[in-house]
Amino acid sequence: MKTGTLTAVSKRKTRSGCLTCKRVKCDETKPSCLRCIATKRICEGYSNPPQQALSFDSLTDDERRAFLLFRSRTAHRIFGHRDVEDWLPTLLQIGHSEAPVKHAITALASLHESLEPGNASTSIRRSGKNAEISAQMLALKHYTSAIKSVQTESPNMSHRPDIVLTLCILFICFEQFRTGDAACLLHLRAGFKLLYWWRCNTATYGKLQEYSRTTLDFVNNKITPILQRLRVQFSLCMDSRHALKDLGVPLCLPLPTIPSTYSSRNSARLDFDRVMNHVFSSSERGIPTRYQAPRRAPSTVLRQWKSALDSSQFSGESSVLQDCTIKLLNLYYHISIIIAETYFSQSEMIFDNYLGHFQTAVELAENISRSWQDEPQNFSLIFSFDLGLTPPLFLVASRCRHPLIRRRAVNMMLHSPLYQGAWKDRYSGLCAQRIIELEEENAGIVVEQNDISESKRIRKVSADLQESQSEILMQFTRWPFEPDAPIHTTIVEFEKSI
Image 1: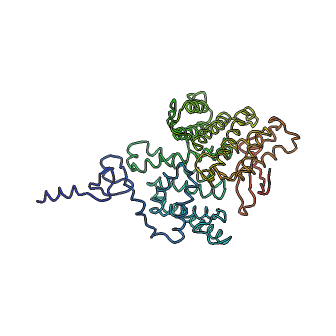
Image 2: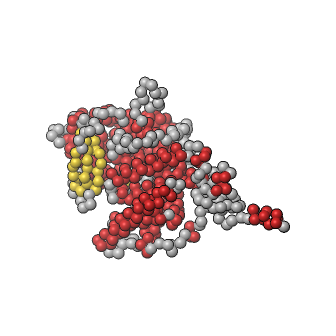
Image 3: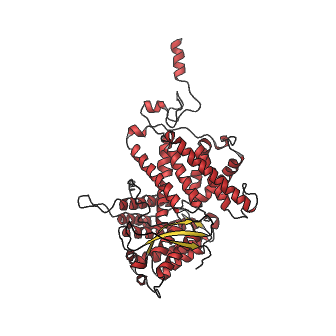
């Protein structure tokens, strides 16, 4: 009798056990149950409860309204039409179970609401300026709470890198809504340091089994691509050769295996993100010495990717969106070649050799912009992890010294009603226009790119929107571009026009 009783108990099922244990005697420890760890298996994690099971009871009225706004508008503005369906349920799930993420979502949605035009009223907005200020104060309150929660719970968060990396992304979004380069880079650096720690920590099976399959997939398949894409955006909008150079850890993620052709546009896009991060990572490791094994030139990998893209015959009906995706990838390819082949040069004159790439990039951007005018609902983004026109256009305007080509890029940014990539278009255009003014000052009539001497050329260091919201503080350096070169400051006024 006793034996039979023990046998029955040992087979008793739980209603919420992990997927690996098939809900048999699962102790339900998270993120990995102890049964899986003891038997040296990768815990598959726990099935997500249905969306309707999530309760708002634990949220305040302000938090509840912010979550509704995040679900209906903010997430779509951030992740774009391609990624929002994958990310939104995950973020809402984590936001209801993790206090720091709850605060971060509330802060982000409230700040987004304060930036919305007056005629796009939301559930938070009441009326006029007071509502805008109230939303901003609510945003800062919850942003501070999110940061404090991470600091307080940091010892316990070491086993939840997925939560900390999610917060890094939400913090980057928050700071980008406030248009501050420096704070965004701070969070991006922290995210990459944690990602590097994660990759080292899961390199052996003994460490790998400490995490559930759900956590592994989330970090590798969702978090990593987003951080890679952000890295490309920020490096294009800032100085591509120095934005993340002093990170302190190697960032070389595995180089993707480039196929002969791609079966889908999304596969080509994902490989581009990986290739570009390989370009930056390889470059940041420096030029190999004679004692080191030679490495493949980053531009070689880019050209291999471009060859696969050109050889691909994508199935399915063509659409404006699909056509624009291919044109965007080609646009980024031309910009990326410039970055890969100029990274180690200390001279700004080297960019004069890439006039053809700059011109092709602008022509592609103009073509895409004309197509997007017919479908503004898909592309009017405040800040997006999707490919956008602003980062490559800013690089053209600031690095191409041909007066006509760079002004075509500036003109597109200044007159664009959209918010794409890492900066609001008009703000990026104003910064680029100021760079042109500084470089062409006292240069006489500029007809060709070599009319701008090396000593007049500048590199943008950072740009931050001032609290008055009426000007941008931009910092830059001039030749010679040495580590201890003085940093100059200039004010960019919003009233300026082309």
